[in-house]
Length: 151
Image 1 (cartoon, rainbow, N blue to C red):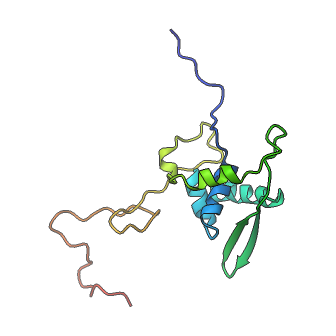
Image 2 (cartoon, rainbow, N blue to C red):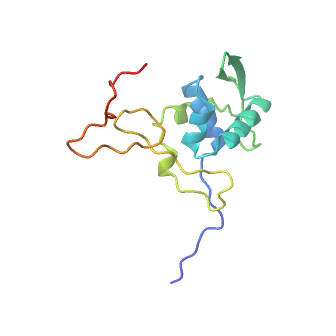
Image 3 (cartoon, helix red, strand yellow):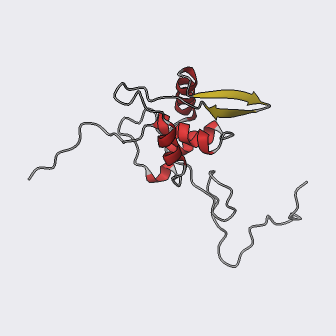
C-alpha cells in the first residue's frame, strides 16, 4: 500500500491564537519569547501581534524599553460560524496549558517563517541561548589567571 502524504501542514490552533493566549498568560512577554514558543522569527511574531492589535484583539502600550500587552475583553471569533461566541473561553483553555518550546515542533517544509530552536544551557538554567559545553570531568571551567569575580 502506498503512503499518502498530506497536502499541507496544519494545526488546530493557529499562531495567532497561541500568541494571544501567551499574552493573556504574561502581559509583559517579550516578542522574542512569543517567537520562540511558536517556532517563528521575531519578525513573523511581530506581524501577528500587529494583526491582533489592528483587529482589536489586544492593545500594546510601551513602558520604557518593553511592551505591555492587554487582551481586549469581549472580543468574538472572526469566522461567521463562531462569530456569536467570545474567544475568552478558548484563550483561557490555551493559557492554562503548559507551554512547550518550538524544539518539539517539526520545522515547516517551506522554511519561510520558521527558524530552528535555540538550545538551552541547562547548567545555569539561563533559558534560551547558545549552549555552553561542560568542562571535561575533573577540570575547572575558570580561565587560568582569572580571579573568578566580575568587574
